[in-house]
Structures are given as C-alpha cells and as structure tokens.
Length: 290
Image (tube, rainbow, N blue to C red; front, side):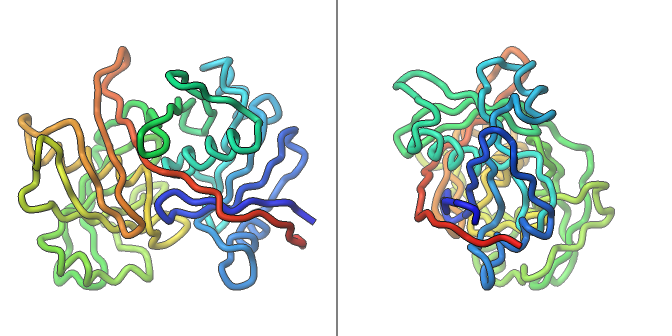
C-alpha cells in the first residue's frame, strides 16, 4: 500500500507521495495509474516529496542553494518527467508546512529544488508567492491549430523553466469555443513539445494599473487543465510583450480554476517572474499499487 495526499492549486490537482529518503521509484505506467481519474486517485500530475540529497537531480539543486533540502520530483499525468510546475510548487510547499517537514516564518522564504532550478517560496495574502526565476523568449514561434479555430494562429514561444507557446484569441466566445480534448497542432513542433496557452485580453486590458486576461491551457503530457502556473506566467509575459513598453508589470490571469497573480521585477541575473495564488490539501489515504 502507498500512502498519498491529494492537493490542488486553482484546480490544477496532484497526487502527493512522501518519499523522504528516495526509496520509492515509480514507473511511467504507475504514475499514469495513480493519476487516472477513473481507476486511480486522479490528478494532473504526481508530486514526489523527496530530500534533495537522495537523488542526482537534487545534488544539482543543493549545489545551487544548500538550503534546498526538499526536491519536487514532478511527473505529468501520463508518467512523463516535467521540468517545473508553478501550481505544483505552491502545493508542494503547503504540504511540507502542513506535515511539519518544513517551516516558513513570515518574511522568510522556503527553497525547493526542481529540475528547472531552485525556486523560492514565500507567503502571500492569497496563499504563496513563488519566484519562478528568469525567463526568455524561446525564438520558437510556431503556428497553432486546434478545434474551434478556422485558421492557424501565430504563437509566441516563452521558456519559464519549461516550454510554452502562447496564442492570442480574439474574443471570449472564441476562447470558450476552443476544442481542447486533444493537443493543439504546432508547426513546427518544438523538439520537446510545449504547453499551449490560448489567451484573450480583458476590455480594457489594464485596470487600476493591473493587466487582466483570460486563459485556457493544454498541458504537455496531461491535456486541458483547470490551471497551469507556469502557463499563467508565460501568458502574462506574452501579453505584456505584445502590449509594449507601457504595459504594467502586474497581471491577473483568470483560468477555469480561479485567478492567479503574476508580477515581474528585475534581479541580478535578469528579470524574474513571480506567481501568487492559493494551495489546498483535499484528502489523504492509501492505495494499492501494482
């Protein structure tokens, strides 16, 4: 039997398994079985809670920041390995705090290792704030085609630790009419695939100095999800890029599971993006794993 906890951040849900010493290895088939919504627990991915010292990727995190005691071993719902998950980091941190595996005082930060580097988590008014780190335009800007679009639309490639393609949509009705039961076609397809975000701006785009947009997302290795943290960040960065130099550095992004806040600020190594939002634990139990 395997003990688990179910958690989510704005509806982006995860199976959480504590494995502090790295004693449990999960195959892609086992991860997919755990995340199956009909025959398993159900989730958009698996968060394995493991000490950084217990696995090779964690050694890289400790070299970057010795305070990163815990490593978020994140897997997509199909069992594939993923670099980062913005909602997952908040849920991971919330689990550490609720179970007493870590502490986070007001004004302090909690360092968490990921395959995209160490991410710093602090408390915020709406839950937790994650420093997603630096970002870059990937230079890979494919055309995107999906059900509900009469013609392919240009996408903007953005890397925030994992790859994204952000596509502008003309109206709320068009966004709501998208068919995302299967992955959008990207031409050319990025070598390692990408999460694809479809976004429509609010009217007006900026209200009280804050940008506002709506988004739907198809996550690589998962499908359409109610929320995608790094996708929300990529969306805010893309719309700000399109809007020009006068665009704000604070954005509210509405996803089917709720609303998340993105802010941008300069750092010593370049501009950083920060993601703020809630994290919740739903229930715990045990499951027999083949």
